[in-house]
Amino acid sequence: MPKVTLISHTPNPERTVAAAAKLCYSKSGVDDLLAGLTEEKTESFVRMLAQIGHESPIEHASFTFGIEGVSRAFLAQITRHRIASY
Image (cartoon, rainbow, N blue to C red; front, top):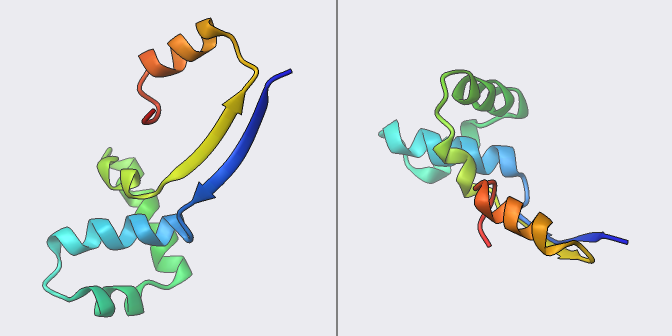
C-alpha cells in the first residue's frame, strides 16, 4: 500500500510567496513588506499572481514528502511531468 508522509514544509507558505513576489518590485525593505502583509492582503495578492499567470514566486514555498510503496511507473510519471523537484 502506498504511503505518503509530510516530512517538512515552509511555515506560512502564502506569506512567503507574497513577500518574495513583492520584494522584486518594491522599494521597501523586507521588514516593512512583512509588516504590511496582513492575512487578507496576502490572500488577495497570491490570488492575483495566480490569475495573471505569475507562478514562479510559488516556488519559494517548499513541501517535502516521503513517498513509499509506489510503482516505478508512477515514479517515472511524476518525474516526467515537472510538478516538483526530486
